[in-house]
Length: 231
Image (tube, rainbow, N blue to C red; front, side, top):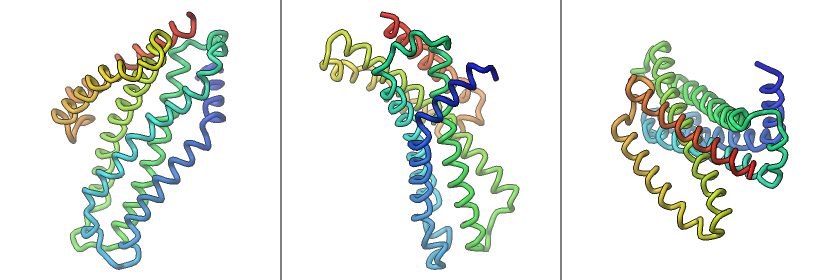
């Protein structure tokens, strides 16, 4: 890792550390609150609807990255001249922001997974999975969450940058114009989740599809923001 990447990471950490910690803590508290009946011995793990808990935590994890990336960009949008005179490329600047946002998602996911795993074995279900199988299952679900989180984060990054560029042209009417690409991307998201609902990272085609769209959105956002800064 070069000094430039280290400098950007340090800068982003200083800028976003409290927001990251806050999201991680809130996510952990929500998970803990849902697992409290099991820890208190009032219910078994199966009785709290594990699938429903996973779906809820996945939705929470999927909004952490987009929110953090928007907050980060908004913090620095008022001083775009800093980016203009920065030795780092826009690819590096936005790449670090996406990386840090995803790290927050991964940390929150790992902590909630550990908490759920401890609760699962604490409740001592009769048909408990062997630890190796449980870890493998958690890894697959975690990989799915990360792939989706990356896609969501770069998609929101692109939309937010596009909104800023359009606002420069037509002002407040941009909020209405931006609905068109938002609807298109929502449709794309619906199609992807229907085609690859559970095994995006496990299917070669699914992984490549998510990766390609993520690269396209990130590249387009980088080009747009670079042009906006230099105009």
